[in-house]
Image 1 (tube, one colour):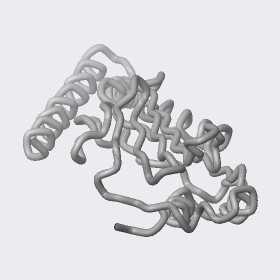
Image 2: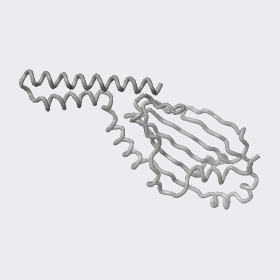
Image 3: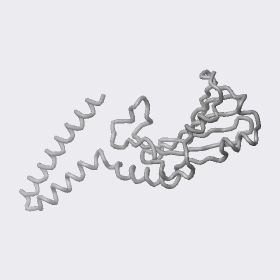
Image 4: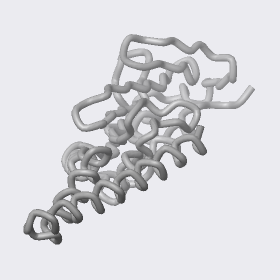
Length: 195
């Protein structure tokens, strides 16, 4: 599939060069500015496939700066203090239940914790929003949450995100997160004994 895309893009580049050359010849024949016509047509030919690239990058950076991040609402130590002796009884099993929901999926980590993955998209300008949480199953309390944005022409599946590969940006950078650590670290801490 990748080869077909690159061949199509190569063909488009050749057509674009021909159209620009034709515009320059036309401009010279009719006493117009060859430079203005050449650059104008080159811009139009560039914008046909790439019109959404700059707005997509700008929107992705805006939402990453404004809404993405990692938040710990209750540390594992705080949870242990509120639930004495419970952490030692938790058992993680690889075959724990997995549920598909209308917004994403939920995975049961053990008797008390749930891993929740929600996704929205496509949102305007090829944007996708993902929210992952660790929740206490007993009271529904969110222990930690991570919100991230990605961009792609299509929803990423098995590495494919559409033929507009220049729109593909998997995640926001993590420098702006309020809290230190990661959802993976907390997940590892709350999974319980492996069986």
